[in-house]
Image 1 (spheres, rainbow, N blue to C red):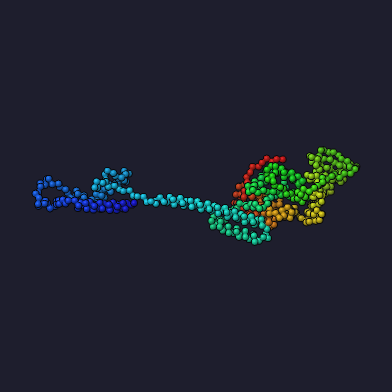
Image 2 (image 1 turned 60 degrees about the vertical axis):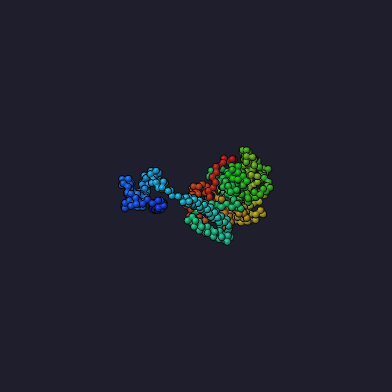
Length: 499
């Protein structure tokens, strides 16, 4: 209550009180004291010294003006005491009809503290709004990540599906700008549980570098976190690749239930568990054996000319036979782990270090592939089991793409993870036109600078990348000129390699 309201209240109170006092006085027996006109003529005049003399200014109860002044003075005194911090007056208040006049406390409004509840409700509402915005952001980015996944995995001929996905991305970007003022946000890579995942490598190194082994384990761990599994693809010829793959499994770098697709194993039928008979060393009666070591023998003709040199593994399994003519190396037969001939290399007569042709065989001995390193023949010729030519290829990349599309991953919804260090990385991107999803893996910023530059500029139209660390992730986000889905691979400790 303001000062003027309180003063008005006191004035009203004093006026009412004075009026009541006058009314009460009128009901009392009349004492006709007339100090101005003298004594009652009907009575004997007493001595003046015995008559109480009361000045009119000393009678506050018969003078309304004086009463009001006294009340104002009392209020002023009360206010002064309050201002001096002495608290309300108690015993010094004026006595009116036997009661002390005191300032009455102003009652507090019932809803005076309602603002506290309003503030709490407002804070809860704002917090709920922030949570809803966070949820909306997650859902929009997840949907955009899925649409990008569709664009990466659907063939270019499925225009309606691609157009619908592109339209949804446009709408999502509009909503992101509406609620968050920007659509420049990287999505997490969407991992579709209905797809098959593969880690691509040029060659499965028996003793890989630390960064390579870490990549295998991180990709495996990331997929395992989504209850998914990655198998592997290698494309280099390696007659020991199956043993190397078992070592990777024992080391914990890959899932123990995963499998390896090697292009040469597949083309030669070794992955089909075909029945095979180990090769025998061609031998004539005139030949004799010259024992060199536990793993090496030389075969000489009757004139002691070198005809063959035979090499075996530690368990005496046939490994390599080198053929000679007039002391010059003609060819080299290579045998797989089962002792079955796998390939033959032919050398230049004038340069024994130069291979001019390679023949690759199936498990049953039929020719499957010829690689020619002269200008007279096509580089690669592929044959059926009946020795009928299927196709020719000018490069290894062309053969790899053909094999993935038409044989290894035919009718498979596949996502391929490939290091940007791969020789075949650029060529593999062409598989996107056939419904394959290709996602590059960047372990460090120093990897293959030219490829990273093309990726960030949008030249390769890559829209999803796996980063080896958060640092690489931040670098890609900061420098990318296009919108990309970027996920950091799970950080895991590298286990001990078990040979």
